[in-house]
Length: 260
Image (cartoon, rainbow, N blue to C red; front, side, top):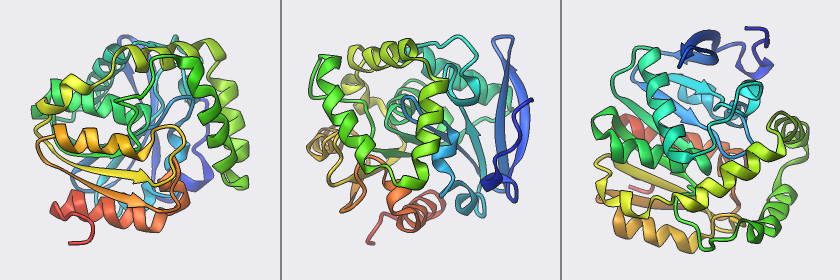
């Protein structure tokens, strides 16, 4: 565990270690109550939950991890294929002795959360999908370059050092191959298999996963509601953390949909 605990996590979390497939995994855990596992997006890290995790940990036991090939796990060989990533997350959940969990996933993490909930329905209690990259409007990865450039423009200046660090830790090949796998293994056919109640959180001006795709999720998920953030873009948990935290806590704790 060579990495120090990040400053934002020092008051609520501790750095822990386990192993998955014989390789060491470092993660953060904190709080008390039912377990919540939070999954980050492509070329990102657990630090993108820094405005949310402590608030959620006041009500739940929160587990934050970097996926292989990203963040603090950037030194490990990336898995790259989305079905294999989802199975890796289940093995992590087993490694930390959890049975069923709430899952919160952003972008690529939302894609993985759907896969896990559909494939292992008994392991997921409730599901929060934040701009999930599970159903994409285009099959050519090159066509997402411009939306990603637009995404960079919406990152708050205080988050730029983190974005640059995460890009550096996840090499270009890892990012490209993982992005290609997102396209090749969409979750359209899996959505009807999700049993967990699902809260969809979407930025109205999301440049990467357009809001109109939310309708596909709503039509196919058996029990889902959508809440839209007018200024959220692709990272609503960063742009409007107060609302995000309130919506997530109320949903996970009480099954309450936003606005009800």
